[in-house]
Each structure stands twice: as structure tokens, then as C-alpha cells.
Length: 218
Ligand code: AP5
Image (cartoon, rainbow, N blue to C red):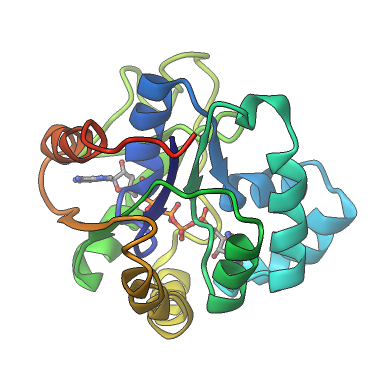
């Protein structure tokens, strides 16, 4: 199964991705997680990306396309994968299409901007795994600790209101055109839009209902 989850920052892509990937035994390819890991490890890419991410701007298309191409060569991608946060621009989508990977389905989560701001302000993440929590809507079992490892959670540098607003602006300008791009290709990979405003469980169920009717291209 090869899946793209599309939607604005805070729509719940990472949260739902975790469940889907666990269910299907496929890796989550989150370009955001990959870049945050590079920042934490102080790699040359990380040093370049730190300020860009803190300001809510996007990485260059070339950098992202190279990262994704390399990631797809890993053996765990053989049974499929889920893209979370990629593609994010039309050039990235064109590059993905050129790889002829045989995408199976695109699912868009829609959530209004004001709800996104409250979600992102309360989000906490486990840096090493990318597991996502919310202080109110999806709290960890122990305050500020990851459920699986017990390690401390972090408040992302880009999850403060001014940067969240910038990220939403970037989403509307640069990523939203992909909705039209994918819909134009719905013959090749079906496109579903679901509200990301319901409960976590209800969204999970809707996604499962979609995926159980998808026949992977193989
Ligand atoms: P990235 O990490 O991809 O961030 P994003 O797309 O902005 O998405 P988020 O991770 O913020 O949100 P999400 O939809 O995953 O929501 P989540 O599940 O966490 O990118 C970060 C940066 O990296 C970018 O700004 C850019 O600089 C760079 N970058 C990454 N990819 C790039 C690319 N391809 N090209 C260029 N640059 C790139 O949920 C949010 C919160 O809401 C959580 O607290 C969660 O618990 C809660 N929540 C989730 N669902 C619900 C619900 N149904 N009800 C209530 N609360 C909920």
C-alpha cells in the first residue's frame, strides 16, 4: 500500500499515520521528522534547516526530493509506505510522479485554520519516534513523557502562534494547489477528502473504511 496523507499543519496527518502504518506494517515517511532528526543531530542539512523550520518556511524542493529518493531505497519500503508531509509543492509532486512508484491512494484531512492553531499550540512530540500527543485532546499516560519509552516530550520550535500562522499561510500558497493536482489524477490514484475535525477514533475508522477498499497496485 502506497499512501499520501495531505492536509495543513496540525490536521492530524502524523497522528493518523502512526495508526495506519502500524496496521499495515509499512513505514511512515515524514519529511518533517527526517528534517527534525537532522537538526537534532547537527548534520549539515540540519544546520541549514534549523532557522528555516523555526520560521515556518519550506525546505528547497531539491533537498526534499533527494531525501525522499534516498529513503525509498531502504528495504523497509518494499511492502509500501505512507508519505506524511510530502509532496508539499507542485515540483515535489511532479518529481514523485516521475519516480513511477504506483501510488495507491491520497487522503486529505481538512480542518479550519483557527482549530489548527489551538491544536498545534498544545501539541507535544517524542522526537526520536515522531509520536504525537496533545496536552488536552490526546495526552500521554504520564505528564510530558512518551508512552512507550518514558522519555521527555518536546514542544516544537515551530508550534508557537506566530510561526503557526506563517506555516498556514505557506500551506495555502504552496501546498493547497496539490489538491487540484491530485484530483486531476484521480483515475490513477483515488482521492478522498475527510474532515479532520472529528474524534481521533472516528477519523481512524473513516480512513480504515477507505483503505479496506483499495487494491494495492503491487
Ligand atoms: P512537518 O513536520 O511535516 O509539519 P506539518 O505538515 O506542518 O504538519 P504537522 O506535523 O505540524 O501536523 P500533522 O498534520 O502531522 O498533525 P498532528 O498529527 O501532529 O513539517 C515541519 C517543517 O519541515 C515544515 O514547516 C518545513 O519547514 C519542513 N518540511 C517538511 N516537509 C517538507 C517538504 N516536503 N517540503 C519542504 N519543507 C518541508 O496533530 C496536531 C495536534 O493535534 C497534535 O497535538 C494531535 O494530538 C492533535 N490532534 C490530531 N488529531 C486530532 C483530532 N482529531 N482532534 C483533536 N486533536 C487532534
